[in-house]
Amino acid sequence: MTRSKIATRPAGRLATTLALALAGVAAGLLLLTPPAQAAFKPRSHKLTNDRVAHWTVVLKRAVVRSAPRVSARVVTTLPTMTTDDTQNVVLVLGRIDVTRHQTWYHVRLPILPNNSTGWVLRGYVGTLYTVHTHLYVDRTALRATLKKDGRTIFKTIVGVGKSYWPTPAGEFYIRDKLTGFGDPFYGPIAFGTSARSAVLTDWPGGGFVGVHGTNEPEILPGHVSHGCIRMRNAAILRLARLMPVGTPLTIR
Picture 1 (cartoon, rainbow, N blue to C red):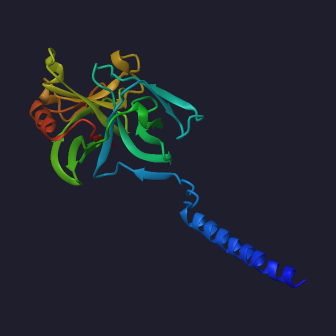
Picture 2: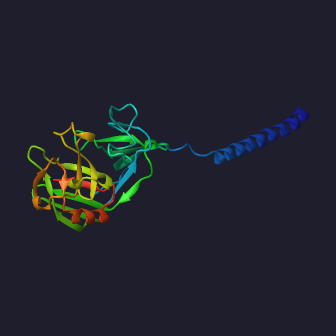
Picture 3: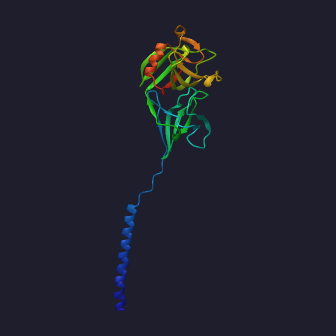
């Protein structure tokens, strides 16, 4: 009995020692194991307001959806080129990071009905560019005003659409800049916009509204056009020095 009692003591101590050692190892492993990764929460960002805006180039034919998810309804498909044979661009109103690897842009669209917007995956478009200008056209006062960072830097009289060919009201943007016309009717420079005539849809190119000069300055200001916004040639040349492509356009 004495030997048995003496023999059991080391075994008990060894078991206790092993248990303590294993507990220490387990605690160490817990310290070394990283915590569970936090669930990703979608993040949204507003990218365009009255003072600053963002635009981007369509890099490949882009499917635009009604919501930032691949199962949402298709609103339209954006080509890479415009009907003026220039690179197609869109105004970016905001973005949402749905996951760590999936970002959608909320964009203004150059389609009918006017003022349409939609969502496009980031992979279809390029780098975001920033503009600090905003063009306002008042169809009642027949005036155009360009602001930069909220400050007025340009004003001029304009001609707008006749009552049966009205210049559409809403929120748009400047899509492209064209020069070298053989026809003096358009003046020296024209800007293409995302606005479209709702009544001249059969026009070449789809009836997009332009901002351009004129060879008839005496008719300005007035309701004189098919929907385009006309300026005196000196005014459009000055505007061209101040207003980049991608500038938001508000027509009231």
